[in-house]
Amino acid sequence: MSPTSLSDNHPAVLSLRTAALLTSAAGFISLAWSITHHKDISDDGAGSINTIVLGTIAYAFLWSLVALTIRLVPRRIHPGIYLAFDLIAFLANVIAGAIGLAVLAPAMEGGYNCYSAGCDGDAVLRVEIFAYVVVFVNV
Image (cartoon, rainbow, N blue to C red):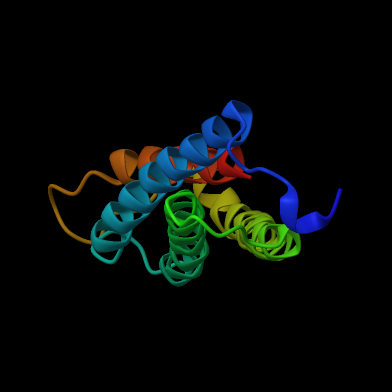
């Protein structure tokens, strides 16, 4: 059996691609929301690391979308391409997520100190924690 004759139409592959697409979309939305609200709450550096993690989860989303779209093309793609791009998405999310959690860890203990009145630092922190959980579920 040659590598180009392997099928990617197995239901498990499609389910995992769909799950990766949905979790990366949830992580992207929650990180984008937290970045816009983080700048009014704290200047701890977590806002900049969230941007990097947002980039890695966006890559995972786009790659999952491309991999699902490739199924519509009648030609087969070499499994090495799938493996390479999946490995890049995996490593990028693991490394950026771990660094992001290390930067976010002090805020998890005491929460954010708000600069302005009426800000909700706890909600932003909960959304950031949810986003990082989703990033690691996506992995």
